[in-house]
Length: 485
Ligand code: NAD
Image (cartoon, rainbow, N blue to C red):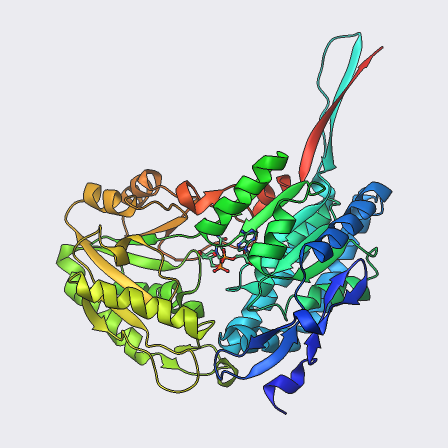
């Protein structure tokens, strides 16, 4: 069976419990590993977004979600988790075909989405208000109530898991959702509509619409009936969303890019650090907001680290994700030919700015959007490759002499998403962790954490926290009720 045979010729949007879409608006969804068209996705515009928002608003006002006893919402999410878990193989294949990542990574992504649904299902019953003493003449207490219509604007790099990250807590707290799926990778998200149908959610509680950022995305961000916007994507689009939200005085959560640094002190375990580089920068071909895109290593260890990093880069087998079903030293295609070329342009500029390409640096031949895993030695922390997000399989290595210098280089970009410290010295690790700007610091394991641990940025990496209990609090607001006796 060909890859395209897995999908309908025309993929539809799901609005108010119905599948809708016009072939005339459809855009091709391309497998980046082969260039083959998988399906055509109907594009929503402002009119379809308006229908979706109004459907969600009707659900909210009806109390069909908000008035449920929390355990009912928990059960609903557990049913969705079970449905998605039961379809993991098919969803993972869809993610791989539309996005390019190895099949085993796509399975991890679907499992991550299931965890978000389970975790927030489990937390659904934990939200409570409090009683505030005001003296004998009063009774005062708070209630936490859902915000209302939540808008979710999703990127293409983890299209399935990013949706679960906000959809699960939104539903757990009783908010209906309008999800604007990424135009390059819309197909896996349709499974949330299937899950909502299979689990008998009220029509309009989960709306899945695909459309271009400038039309559907902008229409959603500026819709006056939206009560909360969760945006994950680039800084440029995040700023546009924040402007639109400000016009309606609507809260936003912005999860934007990063240029995250791992600081490697001389006593670090370099054998273990190889594994951290493998996952930190080459997982999902580096298309991860919290990728380890810079390594800052003590000058005494820089040559050894470059040798290890380049051996690792050369050892990765690069090719179609569908042929990479087992976890190992492998990497898939980038999400599109345009993305691959943008990464290669940054590598060329690094070369021109006197950085040394230690491994890789080129495209691989053929129809797919493949490139070599790349390691670059840069000496100037101010050069573009050391400052800007590459969003590709490119590790930039810089060196430092003192701890203070390492902290300054790590903190010396406009971003502040995550950072890492690698040392056997706990005191040094803690001092460094506290000195680094970012929402999360990993000590001795890049990506340590899970759905339970809060995540988000400072500076141009955005604001607000998702995941964990903190993530849940985005979806409720406090109401105080004061009673005069
Ligand atoms: P992007 O900003 O181009 O698109 C993200 C989403 O925003 C898409 O659905 C797009 O259609 C929509 N969009 C674009 N312009 C819009 C507008 N004016 N109004 C409303 N919506 C609009 O980003 P991308 O290239 O798809 O994603 C890559 C970026 O996302 C990287 O910078 C990456 O670091 C970031 N990202 C961050 C996180 C995080 O959690 N911090 C996670 C994943 C990706």
